[in-house]
Length: 329
Ligand SMILES: Cc1cc2nc3c(=O)[nH]c(=O)nc-3n(C[C@H](O)[C@H](O)[C@H](O)COP(=O)(O)O)c2cc1C
Image (tube, rainbow, N blue to C red; front, side, top):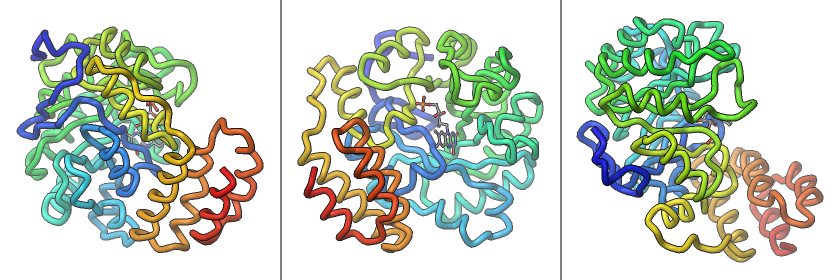
């Protein structure tokens, strides 16, 4: 149960036996929340960071590219890894592999991915049509994960469906230590706005902590989602792309301090270069600079000349090119 004095505030949060330093987290985003970005967000004040979704099947069959998604740097903790799949046995085997080989703090299960390739296989958000299977998957994973297991859900599957409370209760009964609710249905994908009332219904139904998710873009909207939903924590996704400072601002705002000013050009330049360096260390220059094209475009969003820079960024191959480009900033 939530301590009433905690509602709407910044505070440490217990997920199972793991204590998160604060209740504001980076949401999992495939292609975005890799180890370098997670480290940057932790450095900016995120109390908890989430990895990209990992196919349980691919992990169990030892797919070579999958292992890279599981790597964790010591500076990231507390961090969650996220599995997707729909076979309780395979999910349990995958959780056992992660437990043995990768030192994560929390294991999350993806039950919200809307992508057709995933849904067609009965995985991701398709699970929201089968609460009994949700319960069985969570139970199986809890048996082998050796750490708290959490579940990430949407509001529902069909356009106006709100099955989140029923699905979240099934997850809780299966042994989940917390859930996150993205307040959109599968059919909405990322369109329209997140239904924070639907998230409140889940919070009211459950005893375990609930993270609210969807459309938090700054300190004010973060305070508002906590007030509307009564949730224990918040996950921030897209607003953190190219803007890890959001964690510094949101945590200051919630703790009653003045919200720090937006980063100046020096800070922006230094952050982009740090991000590129961390990516290069982890993935080598070839991959790092390709991945950095989209991150840099996000960092530069809204600045005068950004469109012109984006064209140059889209062909960037080497770290030095980025450095040169940023001198013009
Ligand atoms: C590019 C991208 C990738 C995502 N990948 C994942 C994922 O791997 N696992 C997951 O549970 N959610 C994923 N999501 C959903 C986010 O975690 C989050 O629920 C959603 O973006 C709504 O939150 P926001 O409004 O703060 O962005 C992804 C979202 C985006 C935009």
